[in-house]
Length: 212
Image 1: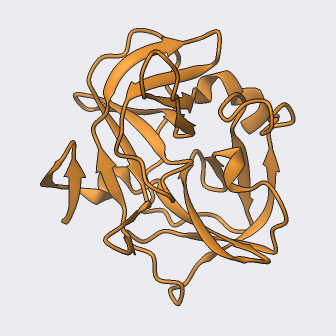
Image 2 (image 1 turned 90 degrees about the vertical axis):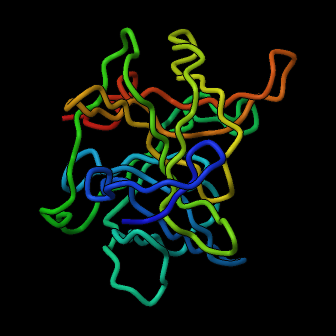
């Protein structure tokens, strides 16, 4: 059991239930950065495209609940940013990338199906490895549902708890025994409608994630 922040107060969670939320280590010429991703199969992860843009020398995947660069990691075979992602024009539209591993994830990682857009009922969880108290520990937030924006292909959430490193983190929908992954975390709106998060809907990108 690990302590995490649940809309401002501490509680505990069975991490094995959501261990498909994984930490991504990205090495660029100017340093090492972390992001979050989610396993959609034994070899395919989804994350935010902005985590993997620019000059990158190495990408590694960690399956533990906290970041330790000396821990064993999984090698990445290749990664692809969505072809329509344009960071200069939009901070969230098509902000999705996929990572293909060289080897399969451990059998202990629980893979959940992608949520097909429809009425969102149950509890939402957003997981991320954003830096908190100078540590990257798998953290869960229970954001409030705002709306499914099908035109923009995003899930909008009232969520102000994002930290650097949370990008690409999965949002799960838990309804009783049913758990699905609906989106990955991208960025915030700072417009006149308020401050809420944009999260690309995975169902809208199935052809990109699973072309075969």
